[in-house]
Amino acid sequence: MASFGEPGVRLSINLRERCRMHDLNEALDDLRAVIPYAHGGSVRKLSKIATLLLAKNHIIMQAKAIEELGTLVSQLRKQLQEEPKESTDKDIKEE
Image (cartoon, rainbow, N blue to C red; front, side, top):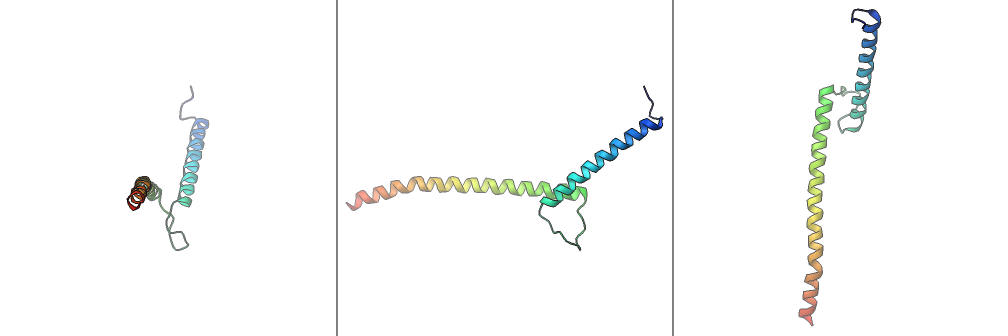
């Protein structure tokens, strides 16, 4: 087995790490492109941790919004189901 002291092994390890970091940085750039924050010449690029925290908070906000919309839809469905009963009851009383 080759030791880590051999130049070829070390170069291979370094290349693999460089590729991993390039992939990570590309993924973070893609994430920065889709999360809402101020873009512009005067605004510095978000750090890696700031990007991840902003993305996490954005996901949490979106999940809460979806939950609230689900609750609202349920309430509206319930109201719609009750309306025909009320209008039928009113029609019967008017006759």
